[in-house]
Image (cartoon, rainbow, N blue to C red; front, side):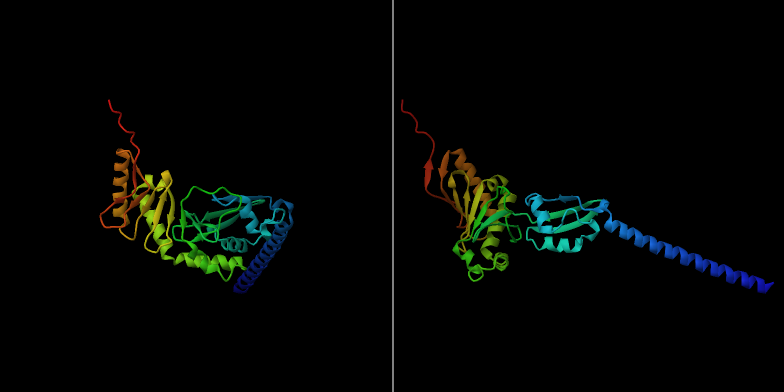
Length: 278
C-alpha cells in the first residue's frame, strides 16, 4: 500500500513538472512571438509625437532635437538616449518620455525659463539662477528686461569663437560666477517682490561698473542708480519718491539712490503748465 502511494506521488510530481515546463515553454514562445509582432507590425509605427510643457521652444524644434522619426517602430526608439539628447540642449531643465500605444510617443519638457535677456556676443536668455539660455530661432521673444554687462562680457569667448559649443559653455560658466550679473538678478528679484508696478516698467539693468547697477525704465527713459546693497530699503524710498513726483507733476531723468537714506533727483523738469495771470 505504501509502495503504491509512493509511486502515485512520484507520478503526480512528474506530471506537475511536465505541465509547468509546457506552460513555461508556451509562455516563452508566446512572448517571443508577441515581441516579434509588436516590433514588426505596422500598427506600432510611430505616427504621433505629442510635445507637452513647452511655452518658448517650438514643438517642431523639440522634435528635431529629439531625433525621433515618424514611421519607425515605437519600440525601437531608445527613449533613454532621446532624453539624454534633449537634456544636452541648454533650454530644458527636465525631460520625460513615454510611449502611448499603439503609435505615439509623448515628450514632456520643463523649459529653463528666462527672467531677463543678457547682451553678450549676442542676445541670450538668463534664468533666475544666472544660467545662460540659448534663444529659440523663429520664436517671438517674451517681454523681459535686458541686462547689459559692457564689453567685458565678451572676453571669456575671445579664444574659442571658432567652436560655438565651447564658446557657449565658457560664457555660461562665466555668467554663473559673474558678481555683476548676480547683483542685477538680485535687484530685479527684490524689485519684482516689493514693487511689481515698477518692475513692469523696467527696461534694462546696466552693470558695466562693478559698484553701480543702473536701472532704466520704459517710461521717459528714467535712469535709477542703485549702488550696492540695501536694495529693499532703497526700493521703498524709490516708490515713495516716484509717487511724490507723480503727485507734483514733476518729471526727471535721473534718480540717485547710492547714498544712505538719501534720494537725489537731477535734473528736474516741471511738466505743470504755467498759471495764467489774470
